[in-house]
Length: 607
Image 1 (cartoon, rainbow, N blue to C red):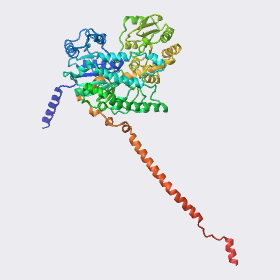
Image 2 (image 1 turned 120 degrees about the horizontal axis):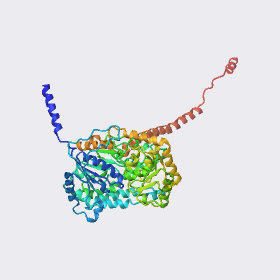
Image 3 (image 1 turned 30 degrees about the horizontal axis):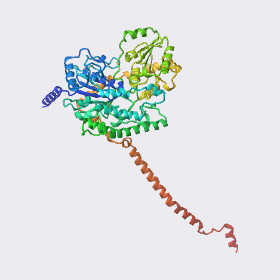
Image 4 (image 1 turned 120 degrees about the vertical axis):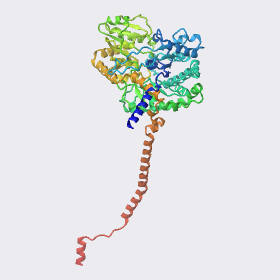
C-alpha cells in the first residue's frame, strides 16, 4: 500500500513539473511618469533582464529610446511582433512627431533581446545563470509625443541659478503642478488613449513608478492584473506607508530636507510635520484633482485611486543599508539599490588618451541628466574653470552640454555625454564632483570613488547628507560656493585617505549580497506573475488611518482615561477637602475637660 501511495505521489509531482509556468513568456507593462531620465534607468535595466528570460516588455515614459540602444539586427520574431504592435498603435501618428522617437518613422524603437551577459562580476556571490529553455522576449519603448513635449517644457529650468538665488525646487505648488499636468498630458495623449482602448492589448503585470503611481495603476484595473512599484526615489517613502509599511518619522528624513537619521528635536518636529502633511495632502489631491482624469481615461468603473494604491503586490525599493538607511520593511519590499550598476568597460580611445596624459589621475565632474549645466551663469562657469585649472596636472573630465573649449585650461576636457560608470570604475580616477543624484551616489559607492556634492533640488540634499555622514563625501552649498571652497574640497577628497577608505568600506558592504539587485528584482517580478499577485504579503495596516497605524488613537484613549481618572480624583479632593477642613475647625471650638495637675491634686488633699 505504501509503495502505491509513493508511486502516486511521484506521478503527481511529475505532473506538476509539466504544467506551464505562468511566469514564462509573460507580458509586462512598465510605466514611469518621472520628469528626469534617472527614473527610466531602473525600469530599462529590469525590462532588459526580463526580455532575456523570455518575457515581452512594453515601457512607457517621457524619454524616447536612444539610437545607441537599438540593436543593428533584431531577431526576426522580435522585429515582426514589434512591427505588428507598432502598426496597430501608431498607424496615424503625425509625421511631425517623428523626432520624438529618435528615428525617421515616428514609431517607437524596439530594443530586441541580447545574449545573456552575466552582471554579477561586481558582487561577491554570483547567482546561478537564468533559464535558457525559452526564447528571448522583446522590449518596446513608447514615448507619447504630448507627454514628451510637456516634460521637456516643464523641466527646461535653470536649476543652478534657482538654487543659488535661494529657490528650492521641491516647493509644494510646483510638485503638485507636475503631478497634475503629467497625469493629464500622459493620459490625454492620443497615443496613450489608443493604447488603453486597444482591445487586443493584454498584460500579466503592471510595474509603476512609486514616485508618481496615481495615474498608472488604472492600467492594472483595465487589464485585471496585479501591479508593483519600482520606488525610484529611495527616500520618498509615501508609497511604502500607503502599503501599510512602518515609516518611523523620528529616523526617516523627508526626502527634500538635508537631514539624516540623527535629527535634533526641532528637526524631528519639522520632519514629522512634513511627512504627515504630505501624506494627508496626497490623499486629498488624488481624490479631488486626479480621480476625474483617471476615470475619463480608463473608464467610470475605475476604483478610488487611494484604495487602488493600497493593493500593491510588491515594491522594489531603490535603497540599501550601505547607501541609504537600515529600515523595517514588510515582506512585500525588496531593496534593489544599484540595479543598474555594472563593472567598468574600457573607455573610448580619446578619453583614455586624455587621461593617460595626466600621470596623477583625474577628476570627473557631472551634474547628472536633470541639471542642465549649459544654463549656468558665466560667473559660475568661470568659478568651476578656475578651480579645475588649479588642479593641474590632474586632469578633469566634465560632462557639459556646451562643448565649446573657449577659455578652458589644457587639463580640462568637456563632452555632452560621458560613460559615467566606465569613468567611475577607471583605476586612475581620484574624485567625483556631482549634484548628489541618487543613481550617481549609488554608482560612486559601487565603484569606490569619494565624492564632492553640490545639491540642487529634490532628493539631492538628503542623499548628500547621508553620504557626508558616512564619511565619503564633502557637501558644498552652491549659494556659498567659491573657487577656494571647491578647490579645497576636491583636494581634501583626493589626499585625505579616510574618504577613500570609507567609500571602499561602503562599496564592500554594497557588493556583499547573496545575489545581484537585478536578479533579486527579476525573481520577485516573476514571483508576482506566478502567483497572480501577493495578497499574502500585504499588511492589514494598509487599510488603517495614520492615527490607527501609529497607535495614536490608542494613546489618545489611554490619555483620556488618565485625564478622567485625574479629573475624578481632583473632584473627589475638591468636594471632600472642605468637609474635612470644616470638621477640624469644629473640633477646635468644642471645650475639652481639663486634666488636673499634681499641684492641684495636692491642694485638694490639704483642704
